[in-house]
Image (tube, rainbow, N blue to C red; front, top):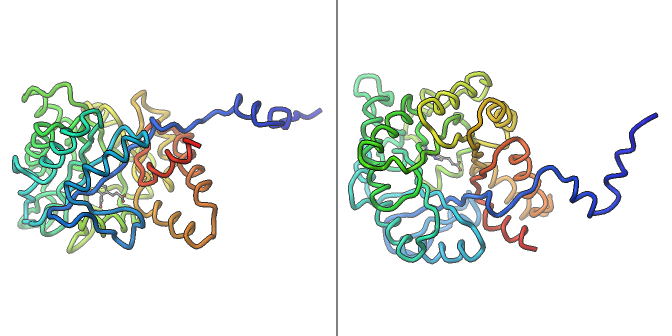
Length: 323
Ligand code: PBG
């Protein structure tokens, strides 16, 4: 006696009926990069089809996004001037603030999530204020500046904030800061388990955010640690996070599942720049069927437990799902 699994694979109808995981256009968040200036858009060679855009171009891009059926974006800023604390992102008239207002004027329904970090804004490229003695990121000073940055985003009209700096206590600090300022309705999607990964390389070219010295290992997690990964996310849940995020996604599918099994919060996976670039290059060289491999990659993240997928493939996958 043996079971004949092929009974339920006989044709597409029965395969669709028993299909356990389905991708939908509702699942995706599309990252966008706004850069100070007037130049239309600039392609960065390490991320094909991803652009640094000026404000006018990003507003036009948002029309295309809405037309395709994408409902949410994740916004990153590349300022003209950087300094040692990242003042630009804390000023009321910051690049991100002006961009949110311009997008919301034309597309009020587009859901804007802002990445809340300092690495794009600091001259040293680290994700916060440096301690003068140790040269390390000063956790608690960075927390205070994060509240200021969050309020700038929210006053401009951001729907959700996503702290990505891996500072201890960031979710509790932001939750408290938002609540005290009348923003208890704004959710926090925490980059709760973020690894010190080499897969961020292409992003740092696009966002111009590489650390000038050292690495991010004193704040981002060791890629080897599974138990700590679960603790990090559960700690952010306890501090009041509304959505937990695992980043990167593809080489951390086991971690996505571990965290999914330990929480009832929605899980987001960040399909990061290096993962995207690898598929792009393989597809462009005819080594794989790009659309199918993209679909399989994104499906694996959903199957692992993510209900939200942040991905540079968002436009392309929505087009594939439309067929
Ligand atoms: C900011 C930030 C990074 C990414 C998202 N937010 C870079 C980093 O931590 O160095 C990476 C995204 C990607 O690689 O697509 N801290």
